Structures are given as structure tokens and as C-alpha cells.
Image 1 (cartoon, one colour):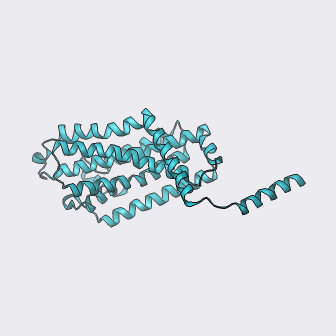
Image 2 (spheres, helix red, strand yellow; image 1 turned 60 degrees about the horizontal axis):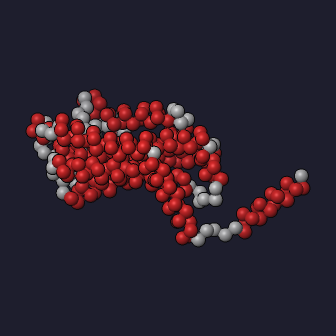
Image 3 (cartoon, one colour; image 1 turned 135 degrees about the vertical axis):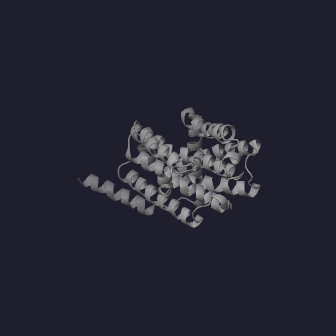
Length: 273
């Protein structure tokens, strides 16, 4: 009994006298964790290849080949290709974020997350590394879509508008990563892919990113974060033809999704692991 009290007292004294890491070492710890998280994702073919190759393949098939003359048949003019480009680009950043939940759930089930928590690394390093990894994979996939769009010559956006859409969408991967972290913190590794698809697929098709919706569904696009991300990118890039809500409103919704989903996920991981 006395030995336990002495051990606890010594541990408390150690915590009190411990000095915080210098800023340089602290940032290096975060940077190294993010680096290895990114390398791990890129080396995992089942994660990296689908989320990097699928967006550009789908854009080329549906945005360029099948709908190559949509500007003439839709009555919307050449600007419709800008909307298709933005929609498929938004899809490219949604996928890694939402399905990062599979990685987190796998780490939880295998005990790797508990091992990471026992290591002397800064608090939150694992979560921040996963967010940065999601943004990195999204940036690669999005860049390929941008290159394909420029080579195809369908879009009429200026270089500044394209750069604005690229930057907004890469940052916009954060709320979808928060959704993925929430999934990974709540369900098992075997169930995470199913839950990811239950969220991703309806959001993809019902948010009006690149297909016309029936009249009774058009009013419900506002419930999907993907719609708000697309509107934020188009609005900030000055594509007025397809900007339906103020960019400030779209940004506020995305911030709310990030705070709510990310907050619940962090609390869940802190309490349960």
C-alpha cells in the first residue's frame, strides 16, 4: 500500500517537474507523424490507388467522353463543363476523407492506436497526421483531375479560378476527414467500409454535383456537405452561373460539420480509444 502511494507520488512529482518540449522538437514530432502516416497510406495500394486513380478515370469517362457535347445539348452553354469539373473535383477530395475511417477503425481493432497513445508523442498527433494525410492524398487526386481537365480543353476557367478551386477543395477535405474519423471512432474495421459507403454514395449522387436531380430532390441538396463544398469552391472562384448560395453560408456549414463530427470523434477516442 505504501509502495503504491510512493509510486503515485513520484509519478505526480515527475509530471509537475517535466518541462514542455521546445517548439522545434514539438513541430518535428507532428511533422514526422504526418510523414509516416502519408507514406503508409501511399504504400497501401488498396487505399491509395482507388482514391487517386478513380476520380480522374470517372471524370474522363463521364465529364469528357460521355458528356463531351453537353454544352450544346443542355442549353447551359460552355460553362456546364466548369460545373462538371468542380463536381468531379469535389468527389476527389471526399473519398480519402470519408474512407480514412477504415484506417482508423483498423488501428483501433488491432491495438495499434493504443500503442500510439502510449508513445511519448504530442497529444493529437495521430489525428492531425490523419487530417494532413487525407489532404495530401486529396491534393494528388485533385491535381490529376485538374491536369486532365486542362488537357481535355473543356473548361473555360482562368488559371486563377482553377487555382482557387484547387486550394478550396484541398482545404475542404477537412470536414470529410472529420466524418471519416467519426465513423472510424464508432464502428469496427469490418463495418467501417459499409458505413463509409452508406454516407458517401447517397451524398455523391444526391448533392447534385454532376447530374440533374428530379424537382422533388433539388431542395434537399442543402443537407449534404458535398453540395456546400462545391458551392464554396465555385463561389470563391467567381463562377456565378452555378453559385446558388452565398460562399459564407457554405463555409459556415462545413465548419459546423468539422466541429461536430471531429469533436465527437476526438471525445470518443479519448474516452474509449
